[in-house]
Every structure is written in structure tokens, then in C-alpha cells.
Length: 448
Image (tube, rainbow, N blue to C red):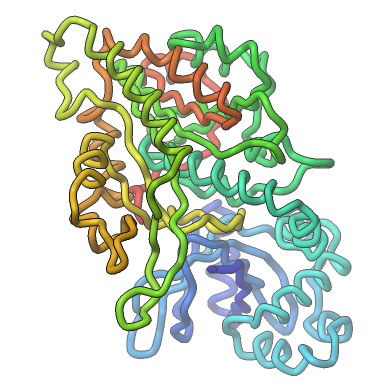
């Protein structure tokens, strides 16, 4: 599992001058450093060192190659320490077992070890309290608060986080704000409660975006949390709510409903955990075992909703064209682990409901002992995160405008089963621009 890391960026006098000019202008800064490995889906906290003092803290991102053995390190969102902290004062506060490796990094630069990063973070928080707003996200206290959450709570938070990240990717918005998650006081009611972008139920922007959603009157009768995300570059917005009738500890999973107001179309995703088992020649593989009583019941409910969908008149408008008007998909993926700092989408298989029925009715999923199981190998083909995002974002799949009224019943049934439902609403661009609101996100291209 990818983890947050720390990096010491040691700048000579001339580069420090350039860095300070970029900070003053509010612009990013790039520095060639010795090549290193780090996932772009997790934060990289950079301590800027000049003249043996830590002067700034910035967020970094591993960039392209910058020459033989070199890598471009992109720095942004730099925060200036009101009083620079000497490297020696930091070293003096470190445990002896980590002091030597940290001393080398703060002298010559490079990636800190996990323990070294944790120790430096705590030392800087003590020596420069004004830096806590950024470093609190990576403090030992935050880690311990997450660890104290029950296994069931963390499992449900992981599913809700995955649903929120998927919705942001479909909407073409950055997933980075999810990294700002921090455990709220007490037990969280949903993943959204720990985000700075969380809104009150009565927030005008939330009400504005949801008033056109079929089934909003049903949602309002249940407990729900809300968050609004917006792209500064395009003014496009996504409102996400998590509705449920049970406490987080008692919920039985999370379904995602993505509603595109422009095309009046919705798609629904159910997440199913695959277990790790030994495959041929003892090589581990992800497996989903059948039969599964809960899934059988859920598919029966989907079939009932499909009957209602098919009862609507055939679509006659080009905006209502869909490659398939069946809005139901399953995502089979390895069991989710809650890591709020990792914004990568979990690799998995998106399978249309119609394809799932054909797959499970055939003989190709029989194991050597006659048991039924679905794997990445015998599924034949599937949509991955990128391809699923592409077909949903432009409403190439999903309900037509007249069919979307069925969304009311889909929401009601999901909540009544004890699941949480993550409902993401992408309003029309004109509506998003007219409603205004804070610019929380920078648009990026969705990836895996």
C-alpha cells in the first residue's frame, strides 16, 4: 500500500533565490534531484532547506526524467515558515535510531525513510507551530486516530472513498482534495465528514444541485452528508452526498449512483470484494466466489428496476442515445483497505449487468473442482477505471432522460437494504457557473 513520504530539497543560494521568486508569484517550482520512486497518488511532503535551515514546506510531485540519474521534482503550495528552523535543532529532537539517516538527507537531499519522515514532521510541528495546518495531516496523532477506528468502520470508509474518487474521475475533476481527509471528532458518519469541502444539508449550493435530482425528496428523509467540489479551470462542479439509514459501523456496503444532469442519465455501480486465493501453480489471484446470496438478491432488485425502465417509450432524441440503456454495473476488485492519503482508484473489473449474467451462466467460470468463481482471467474482458470513466462521463451508457425517474426507487431500495448510497450529481455547466461557490479543485485527466 502506497504511503505518504517526505523529501528533503536542499537548494544552493542561486536556486533558493529563484525558488523564493516563484513562491512570491504564487507559481510552482521545479528542481532536478537524484532519481527516486514515489507514487503520484499519495502526498509527497517536501522540506525546503537552504543554508542549513528549513525555510519552507511544500507539496511535491515526481515528474519526468531530468537527465541521467536525475528526476524532475515539481513543488507547489509552498508555505513559508515565519521563522526558519535550523537543521541541528531538528536533529536534536530526533530519536537516535533515525537521527543519522535524517542528518544525511537534510545535508544532501533525498527521500526520507518512513520513520525519518514521521520524526521530522513531529519535530517541525513542535519547533514551528505555524506549520501545523499542513503537517497535521501527516502527524502521528492523526495516524493513531485512524488506527483506533474499528475494522468495520474503516472497511465502509474505504468503500465510500472509492465511490467518491470514482465520481470525481468521471466528472473530470481532481481527486487530490480527498487527501485532505482527517478523522472528525468522534466516530465519522461518512467519508465526507472528514473533508474540508463538506457542506451542511441546508447549504444553498447543495440544495441547488440536488433539486433537479429524481428522488431528492426521498434522500431528504434520511441522514446524509454532502460535499461540493469545483474546478477552478472550468467552473464545472460536482456535488456528492452520502445517504444512509444506519450508523457507519452497521452499514453493509456502498453503491455509487452517478447522475449527469446535462444528459439526464444515471449509472449505478455496486462494489464486490474479491478474495486472494492460490491460483494455478500456486500463483495468488483475486477471486469472486459464487453463489452469492446477497448479490442474487441485489440482481433481482436491479431486474425489477430494469422492467420499469423498459416500460418507458423509446428514446427519440440524439442526446438520449446510449450504447446500452441498462445503467447497472458491478465492480469486482480486491478487498479495499482504507488509506485516506492514497487517491488512486483500486484496479478492478467493471462488468455490465447483462455481461455478468452471460458470464455466470456459462461454463467458463467453473474451477477444477467444480466450484464457480470469477477471476480477471476467466472474465474474458472488462472495463478498467479509465475506460469506464470515458463511457460514463459522456453518457454513452446509462438511462435516457425519460427513464431517469426510476432513480427514485433505486435510491430508496439501496438505502433500505442497509447500504449507504453515494450520489454524485454533475449539474449542467451553465447551472454550475451561475451558482458560484469556492474553487476547491484543479481539473486533471482521470487515470488509474
